[in-house]
Image (cartoon, rainbow, N blue to C red):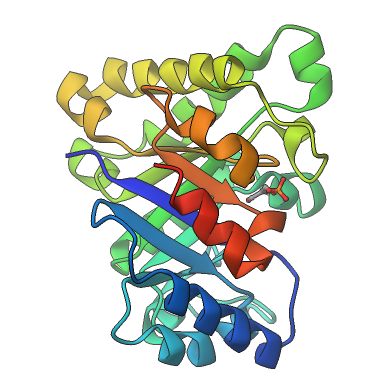
Amino acid sequence: MRKFIVAGNWKMNTTVPQGVELAKAVVEKSQNLPANVELVVAPPFTHLVSVCQVLQGSKVALSAQNCADKEKGAFTGEVAAPMLVSAGCTYTILGHSERRQYYGETDAKLVEKVKLALASGLKVILCVGENLDEREAGRHFDVVTEQTRNVLYNFTAEEMASIVIAYEPVWAIGTGKTATAEQAEEIHACIRNVIEQKVGQTVAQDMTILYGGSCKPSNAKELFAQPDIDGGLIGGAALKAEDFIAIAESF
Ligand code: 13P
């Protein structure tokens, strides 16, 4: 069964007390959401333990925004997957375009990260997406296909059940420019096809594929109505509990 997910990527925003307040507001407003929609929040590392306490007993899951490509040891400043589990995470985002762009995250490194995350029992929200130059050159299908294959094809069908894909066109992130529902749908269908080629139709049909990039209450309904869009990875609008919940209510 395909799962619908709305995940909030808080990025490098909020202090710990602000994050706790935001999480409380999300929990409070999430009581009446339909049972088939899963809510996830991804605060900064420093907030995880405190936010986990707020989420206890709620239906909101906790995610990290990244994890290390090493299991443990002398890697100053890094945070390993088992540490995230011990802080209460059930998910981690990996391969966000901001990590690819500013921190040199490669597909090869991502394979290591995904392996370690899955081995620790975390579910992964794996981000893919083309930048503006690539879209304008008409290379968006190729770029997304390659990113998806380079990482996902290293995993079995069983492992893929713990992976969610997030398609985030870089030109739509934080710009107020959303991909149209048609533009997003055709890439989502392409990603599902790439998965199907490797592991078959059943697994591909069960896979959750999220859209991210200036998703907000006013456009979520149209995006989520597409057959291959199974929810959203939300940036800016996830920092306001009201907007975040309104997006989740768009299903
Ligand atoms: P915005 O919703 O702010 O465009 O960010 C999207 C994103 O990058 C989520 O990971």
